[in-house]
Length: 525
Picture 1 (spheres, rainbow, N blue to C red):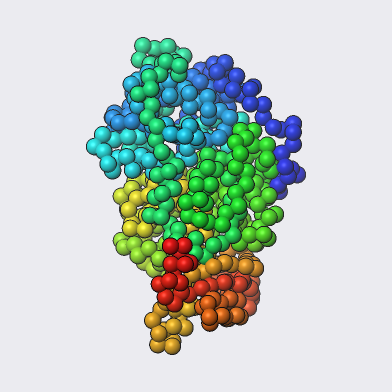
Picture 2: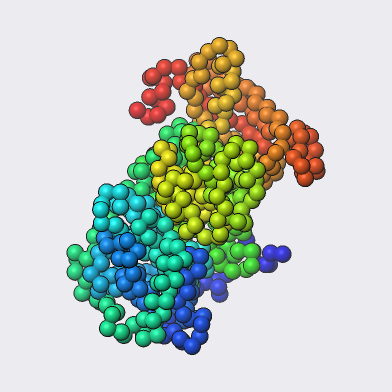
């Protein structure tokens, strides 16, 4: 049962005091006799709070020094790409990281605009750099992901761009605790005050510009622009807020962007299911403000503070990550033309994926919880998409080569827009073939009155698909279609779904250009 505060705005008494937690970050000394205050890498780095003595300057310094000690044997001798999210402790932790990197003579790639850098942007930067250079780079990302505002976190990404595997993180963990036990006063520990760092030790890098420009290699941005779905984007005050603004401008998308101001208290949030402030975009309680506004939009999306997670909201509410992962896999393997690639899922993901994949003879790679188990599979192109039940996923570029090897909430949100933008093409193609005409290029201009009868369409269901042309203008070649999906025969175990049960309905506005001039007009050329 959800907490009484779940889905309600954060109360003033629960808003964190920034100065208190920042002071504790620098002042608190970990108690080495307390196991909870040691460095401990979980599924995605070390996390904790400064007030409890589990995430302090000494923790971050020890971890960074351990990374410097071991990165050569991990294959990295080039620069370190550094990213950080919008948690209050991420800024002081960034200073600590930069000081230790400089002390060890390691070049840090920092954002050229002094802006925040999302997790997928760091992963993409590492891959991009290492394709072009023989000397390999790695990365440090400062984030506790979706955890509460008073939390801090740090993780290490290897030369393939993804989270380090268990062997590497255990080595870093043991080494860091040795430094922590010595209060970072051993002769091997090196650090330079931020005021004394040479300018050459930090290289400005255009994380956002390069990432946004390359999006067309992984997402059909032209289809989204042409369809123009009216989309609400909740940045949740995270590190990718400026990325969404740049995407809107670069690709001309109809986006309404909210909660895009930097507020490390996250005072604009609503409480999660347990009454805690948590920026988890896969929670309907966290996304309550978006869900309440969905009636004014075709679609809504959101991301957590480091942008490795996604949330997608439609008229019926928040789409479950399991459902969307299955739909995304089906769509991608249908539209991308990938060959000899599988699907990656964690052991706790839905079996819907397995059932669909078996029917189309696509191999499924089931791994333990943690995206690090997908990284090498994505890097090598063994899987086309890898995803978790906790709304974290990434997939390959259109040409089947690697995009990111860490979770990318931005491309998952954009994929939702792309899927919507391709709505009625099958109808138009079928009618063209039936009339003996070639299939023409068409665009989805907008979706209205989209209603979902169920939160998911079960695997194995037999569908009745109805698409009716309700209006057509032959002069402009525009039309409106009323569409619906209903149950004809329920799948095994879902006998409660009676024949005729409405699954989805909506009105689709479409346009089919008849000549090059009309095509150029719709594309804005």
